[in-house]
Image (cartoon, rainbow over all chains, first blue to last red; front, side, top):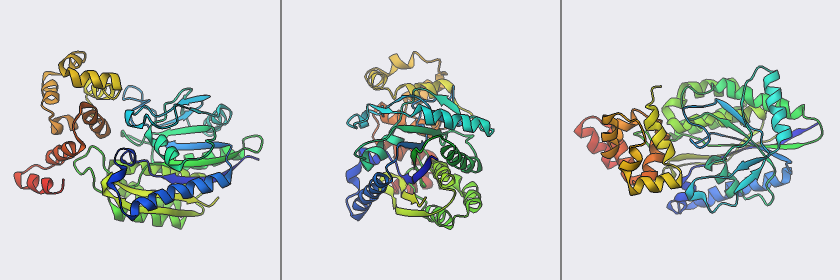
Length: 274
Length: 97
């Protein structure tokens, strides 16, 4: 039976690439430490496939065609197109069509209807975490793109169900594939809004508390109530919720959290003990 | 959620390095390709963040001004200014840039 061997969450703030030096104190060392910890745990997990969960930052999709959820089923994905990430070693990244199609089929069989793409471009939402985590050998990637940017967005409840569906798809995949999950984005932040730069630390800490509790309905309820007031970027917590669902709500651990206003973000990193 | 489609399309398109460079070199030439309303064109030319923010996704707004060459500090300053409605509120907003 195939199985999930690791579930992680990572910040993906662009200013980690563009303005890394703005943060010079202990927080920078701690962020580096969090990426190193994910690298260590992911390498120990020896995944054959990495499922990433992130938004599309207006790269693949536009308001003429805006899927709620899209699975990248192609053999190849293109790397980050942002000019300020041209130095990253990801011109293209291998996909895993067999598992991706199985995930899409499992979704359809369970009354979920994802969009599909046979050639996605993976932007900074995936590129920055992969770059900073720095795996020696990158496994094939199956991207799940979630609309976290443009209302209306998938409900938090549905994202939790998507995570559980992902776990089901892994367990029903023939063979003994080892699959890791990496959700990116969050926590509180505000982009292109009048309060850009504001970090809502109480929101972030309450998210952490409810993730730790394992009480998924309480997490969903809290996010439904508070996500809007924590900045539009906080909607990326959907990706964390999907990871939480994939881990079946078990074993959440914060690897690092700090409000980092210099990067406009509540900067969180996590792992679930699966 | 109401969006100005062609304004959004302009903001989307200037993210590509080629169109971004062309836009920075000759803004009017690129603007002429889009069927924008005259008041929208005027707002783009004036960098009227408040007017534009009401018509596009906030992420696209940020990406546009980055591609158009505005510094992040200026953009955030204009955003905060746009979010404040009275002179007193604007002064407070400016103190936090």
